[in-house]
Image 1: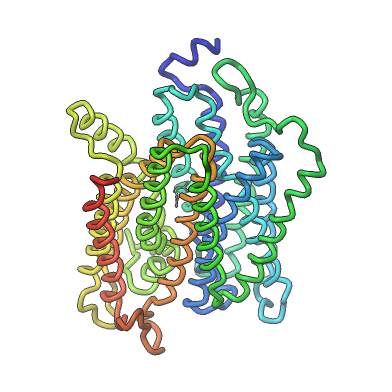
Image 2: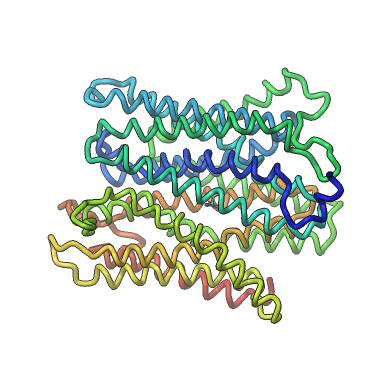
Length: 499
Ligand code: GLN
């Protein structure tokens, strides 16, 4: 009975529906992304630097569209319709990639492959905008506002995200990253099927399980929303699709940076000129903006995983285990593995510290997350220090790095999400969640740019330069992330009492 559900320790069934839906969607997102850059290089014959920027452009647009998706959902469509539309679009996008990759062999003279690639990725960018913010916010709507189980619910949900990533990455690396460019299509096909399954499960369960503790359905299309204003809402989406395609096609043009800057300034103006907010509301909003700025340094380094860190695994690391050579893209899986196994440990640690009154405040946890990220790259610096040409590095270093990065993520990402949830004035809750995602958008753009500076040991091209700093070798490259993350961690720690 609903009134018992509100007090019981177990969770509403709707949580498990959202868990399953998100799990299959993350299978599709991370599974595809794990092999994307290798596909661009080996099948689409892009060079490493261009493919890196292309990846950064794609993932940054992925985090930009949730702002629009949340708006359309609040105004016109409601969570359910948005999630279904987004899921369908993403499944279609994956199948389009499948066809694009199936044309391999004649790509050079087959423009169709090229355009299918853009179309497929464009559909996923738009689909994710509808899907991601809505599924994340629905989790909270299954509980009463003051329900103590909400934090635990988000932890369980985060587990679903990483379980999906773990299964997806394992399958796509195994069937797609085989060294034969023709096989990438199987990875995309698997992702398309996973996304279809997620959408079907959601459609089946939405009417049965998605309701508030007192039995009212959540996420339905608001009354009075007509088909016409729904279609009207599609206009900005189409615009982003076109922009996305044009942008990706010229990944050298940094159009996205001013776009992001504009969005941040616009949102800040909107909130800070709102007369109905109190001074303490505005202080909370300010903290969200400050914290979002610092996490850019985290994700820009962290999201090297499918790009430069996979180049490293492919070209400079010994990947043989028990006489069997593992696919380079498979190593990204370590992140999801350490998060799935580490999340329960960290939950216990925070609870134990909390009981003794020793639990650090959120900004301190986030600074520690950045510090762990720096430690991870420091381990890599040891691994590649004085590396002689032709020598392969032991996989120990990359495994250890992913260990530190994943614990860093656990210190920073779920903590940040719940901080945003707690500090945002109700009126601007989705918009401020959008700001958190915008930080990701900026960071992913930077991640692609940074990966384009990878000092390819297999190439004789002149070595890259960043702000006058010559990146002569892998040691220099990884050192950049050690320094940027450590400096960001130190500053965040110093200002944390103020926050
Ligand atoms: N891994 C988490 C997810 O996919 C968080 C990603 C992020 O915020 N960059 O939802």
